[in-house]
Image (cartoon, rainbow, N blue to C red; front, side):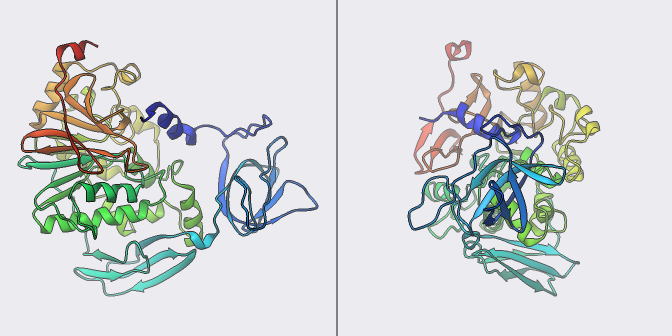
Length: 457
């Protein structure tokens, strides 16, 4: 049994101000992740992390300093990584919460990150066992396969300019759609193997099938970089086999590219500091991953489905835009600043950040409809589908108990489930003209069309 309300609560924690256990409140805290180097004996409650002193605020519990072979839960150790939330007052960094990682820097892996210096020169940066490895690559013209030091991503392929994909694939007959992977690479790989999309080695094995990733692939999880490279590799392998991988952008992709980093895994604050680049710069227009992300679409039609991360609102439909127009407008605006006031006020010029835009809209769901402009009518949904020649709108963004109809309406399908382990993972499969819910073992459950009674309830 899953508890989506609990998962929603966990997802929102990053937006809440941290409170010390003794009632100390630190407004707008900053965060540091680094190696605990020393604990002061002269000034109790003072830690030195990466050469900087942090003082625990009054009433905030200081984790116990551990030693020896037996580790106690929650203890901190010299030489291991810790995360602190703090507020700087009069030059003193006051800690409101500390989280020991229980591992040393030698356990950290990340990369590769490929940063372009000009059209043919790039620097590859990886972290392997806590060590930063940089290599320079010159003469990158045409298709090149580069070896990397990463054990998870041993090679990457680059081929110059990354072009946007088509917005419409009406002839797709076999489609598997997932959403909100949030950096859970291992679970996703097991899911793909269980459904025959990849072979045991992780290579594309699904012929002319279409795999759709409906946004929020980044943030929260610890294997975002490796997951992105895996998706990019599968995208190319699928195309060579006559299939396709479609990566639809969600709100967390646009947040990362704009520098809103509230939801990144703490590991990435550590790795970006070691690399010497901000996390958003590692996904910026000078990076290979950043260029690729900026070429992706935000609204696509695949077979009889209109895929959009959060939802396609009646207000968006009222603008009369085609899919290419929506996608081009969003691509042109990706990047800083995050949350510009003007963009949140005008949907036409603020498709990325406006609450009626495709990255944020939640009006399909009864529990959210009032805050998002009200429940759209069946006629409004039908108009959206008619505009784009589809039969169903498929969305992620809002967690559902299980993949299926939203609000009892077959025109709307929600596919956002948890991906922390294979027992939770699920996808939407369209095969032979039929719709199924599939799990990590490839077991199919037909989607039962809701009855009139179901809709009334």
